[in-house]
Image (cartoon, rainbow, N blue to C red; front, side, top):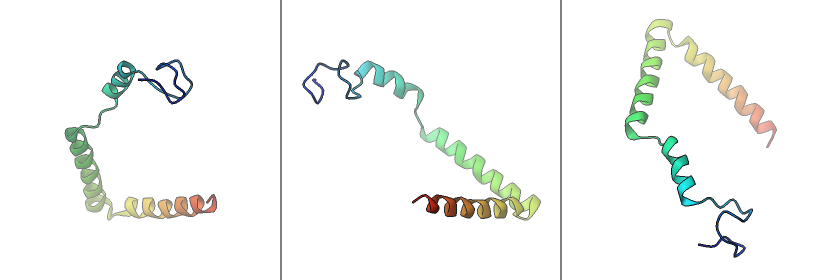
Length: 77
């Protein structure tokens, strides 16, 4: 399949990637459902631990810092 300029694949500067290379890259960057569930469970456990042990002080701190970050990002808009 030729690239946008009609050149053969992988020789143009259009960013086209051969199928074999794309497969190799995707092999290492897969987010499975199992991994997503483990990450979600770890986040929920961390939030629950913060609420139970520290009365949500860290969540409040992170929330405040997030709003500071949003203000900083809005400045660059």
